[in-house]
Length: 333
Image (cartoon, rainbow, N blue to C red; front, side):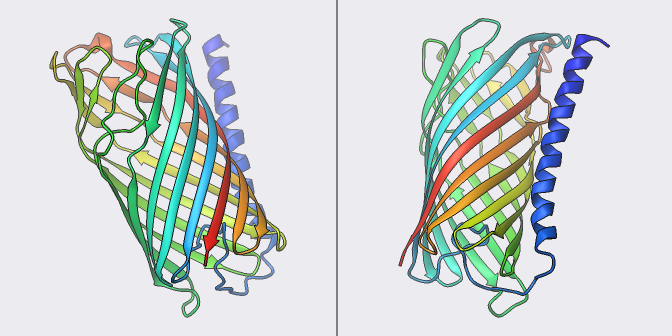
């Protein structure tokens, strides 16, 4: 067996093991509590189906550290280099309960990351704020009077921070550029010990222009992203609970063009499968919760295709990421 096949087999084994662990974390809580599915309409802080009641102000403050690696092949299929990225991010969300079943939400984040190239030995850095997102959630059906919860949600992120590409001599930004509009829906069911939560979203990403380090600009067309997620929360006791989730993001490609050379290309990002697990510590039940979270992302192969310059074609393989985060969630009444 060749070295490349050994590496491919090892990567497949790692991805399969990660996916199996994610499924186990989802299934085992349900099996453990299968004997008690008595409905419970309490809104529990840290639960994936949580919404603040009327007049409540909810805050979520989070920090995460992510490490990712990937291999890049040229147009002949030969690997030219690999890269690794270390990213740190801070995120803040503020939500206000206008009514018991209608919530307004504002989210913002700041990140700094460094990427190293195995071929050149050089590193690039990027930092800055992401575009803020203003959103709303409407609970159409509430389990207090219905058989389950049904939510409809939407958000809009304007193009506040113009993106800039990174080079070994110039830092870039982390804002993607362009507007982003997201619509979604979620169904959840809560018992005394367990919550089941399923959600789907569709995001329209507007056109964007990125200022490259050499002074040229690359323009990208609009595209869509879709996601499906399934989460659970198992309440171990009044102090500790365990969240587990698995999801899939379906990324659609976008066309691009360098505004100086007029070279066009098709960017095909590939889909992403992820699973998360979080241990929640209810410092003050219903008021303050601290969560320690682990997330694993498995990326499908992605590529950049140049119709008029095939020698510039590239593909990215063996891309995966691990992240560890700490979150504080709190409510002011």
